[in-house]
Length: 415
Ligand SMILES: *[C@@H]1O[C@H](CO)[C@@H](O)[C@H](O)[C@H]1NC(C)=O
Ligand SMILES: *[C@@H]1O[C@H](CO)[C@@H](O)[C@H](O)[C@H]1NC(C)=O
Ligand SMILES: *[C@@H]1O[C@H](CO)[C@@H](O)[C@H](O)[C@H]1NC(C)=O
Ligand SMILES: *[C@@H]1O[C@H](CO)[C@@H](O)[C@H](O)[C@H]1NC(C)=O
Ligand SMILES: *[C@@H]1O[C@H](CO)[C@@H](O)[C@H](O)[C@H]1NC(C)=O
Ligand SMILES: *[C@@H]1O[C@H](CO)[C@@H](O)[C@H](O)[C@H]1NC(C)=O
Ligand SMILES: *[C@@H]1O[C@H](CO)[C@@H](O)[C@H](O)[C@H]1NC(C)=O
Ligand SMILES: *[C@@H]1O[C@H](CO)[C@@H](O)[C@H](O)[C@H]1NC(C)=O
Image (cartoon, rainbow, N blue to C red; front, top):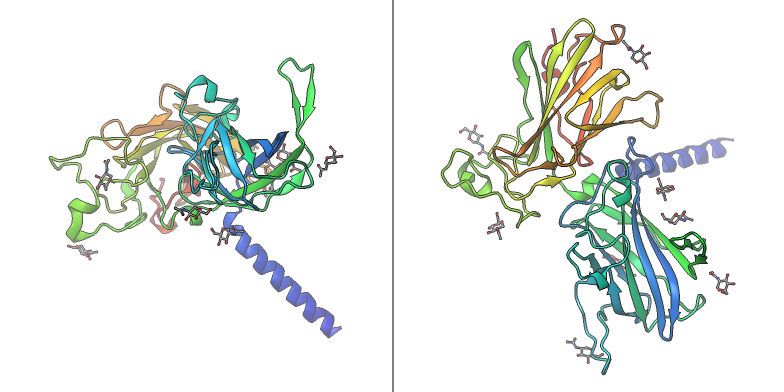
């Protein structure tokens, strides 16, 4: 009996700790969010096969932005890539064992990236050539997928001799995603455009990749400040939210917007941010301003500021968690979709994103580097209180990464 309870306790301990480590990648607002990579063998060739590789983004609000994805793997044997359509390999590797016909890539661990939309027509296939960008499921489901086609040589030539590639890596362009093992799944059924002919892949492999903000970056990329119309007090972004401003290297670590040498905003250096000098040093700052608090309504203005001179954010999005989203009446200046927390049934979170050709591009730091939107809520007097913090969000994500909020005891008073 005591042995049994001991082993139960041990089991509980193991379960608790196993789930603890896996919560890192678990997102309560998007519990089924993942990126699935699918390999379909669509034909056999004399020395291998042709595979259609498709990347599906099943995440509600996390997209892959510029400079885009790169997909890598390790071959099980000595496979080579004869050609790629709708993508390209980044390096050729050592192809000296081939004479005459030289493969595109002989590396043991090749990497494929997307082509740009300007690629010649004969190098394109469906869903390719978007410069590596993949939209989120909510924002643009038609563009939440990306494909390329590979011709693989020195490989198995039937479904018993072919070997599944190992160690799939998805970079965007840095780390963040962890991909599981490749699994043989039920073969994909393809339907011809006129829906009159059905074919099937010879073999299909699926790989699931999940995101962890901690893996993507050791430091946050965003912070939020809170203010209210009737109070001068604001809760600013916490000092050192994203990094600490170094006193003696002001001109090297960041840009003083008042200095004469403010850099020209550019899109050249997008992986190394160059931020405006602030106490929080974040490339993105969100301001949540309580604008109106009347008998029946309350209204919030959200300002998103880009403080990074090195990149604009196309197709930006915000996710905001607040218990009153059930009573949201109107949204001004952005698109909106309710998200439901997995554990509850009410709409306590919302996804907000820019309106195409109006404010869907958050320009680089400077005069144009901001976007604004407003939310109007019906007041539920049983729930609304002017207690500290109630009118302020519990969580904010920018492009899927959580923003640093002021500590609750710093929230401004509402009344
Ligand atoms: C990946 O996402 C899809 C769509 O939400 C879901 O059906 C599938 O079960 C997920 N896969 C895993 C391994 O979580
Ligand atoms: C390429 O591989 C061959 C053997 O296949 C080897 O002899 C040669 O040194 C390699 N070249 C380089 C540059 O690694
Ligand atoms: C391999 O191919 C044979 C003949 O086409 C088929 O019957 C079999 O189910 C396939 N096996 C797998 C694992 O796809
Ligand atoms: C998979 O990748 C990891 C990290 O890059 C590496 O340590 C490991 O050896 C690789 N495994 C195979 C089979 O290539
Ligand atoms: C494999 O991935 C595709 C694309 O996401 C999906 O439609 C299919 O259901 C997956 N198969 C399995 C067994 O998960
Ligand atoms: C920067 O200077 C201020 C006052 O001049 C000082 O309080 C602060 O500790 C300094 N910070 C660092 C990182 O040296
Ligand atoms: C990229 O940024 C680094 C650091 O801010 C700078 O030294 C470099 O000149 C930049 N390169 C380009 C092409 O702008
Ligand atoms: C707010 O939403 C809740 C849940 O949907 C509803 O019961 C309540 O009546 C709403 N309040 C107002 C003032 O509309």
